[in-house]
Length: 264
Image (cartoon, rainbow, N blue to C red; front, side):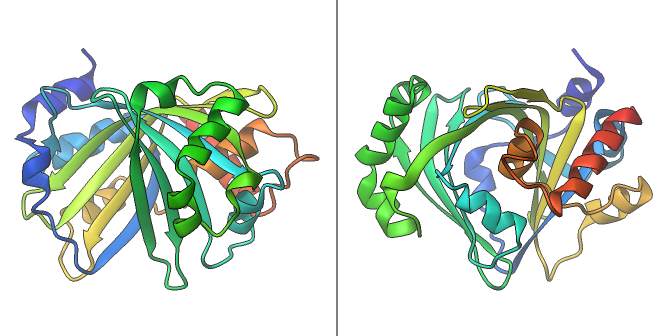
């Protein structure tokens, strides 16, 4: 058992049903990047102010994700250039509960992200390891894709797989959620390249902007600063050549992530 697992055991658990009562009517999302060592400090300071999500005794969930993009990398490039209304499409696997969803995320002109999803057969989706099978998954859900995505289904191909572990916290006032992603690993379907970012931690704070947040003061105290991080875009940038896929403004984020790992 790790030190982080030990702290999670000390925290009060919260179920999915109880978490449904967290209504974020004026939601704002902020991401932070840190290390495992800093995460341990953060959890130690925050343990009396937050519940930890517990699903059948599991507090650290295992996730896998398959990201699609067009053959011209249009979704990656839209994010690279900061376009409003940009989208991502993925299949998210919740490994511990054997659930899978095809999801479309859209970031609007006001910086808000909306996610729409449809359940897909978990075992069939996990087994979709060939391009033909990945295309069949899109074809089987063509009506959903056509209604939610700005891109034609026939232009989509599998680009990236990733794996990570997630801890989810809810503050005791039930006004915010905190997702903590760690043990990140990427597998580029197009190049065959892999990249391991284990040791890096991605924190996303989802809160009611009208309510005070106990975690923000702790993040500032530990000098954990806001920093954008798209798993799809960073995974593609880390596993693609610069000639094949431009990095532009992502270069600074790539350097920052590697610097964080070097400080451990």
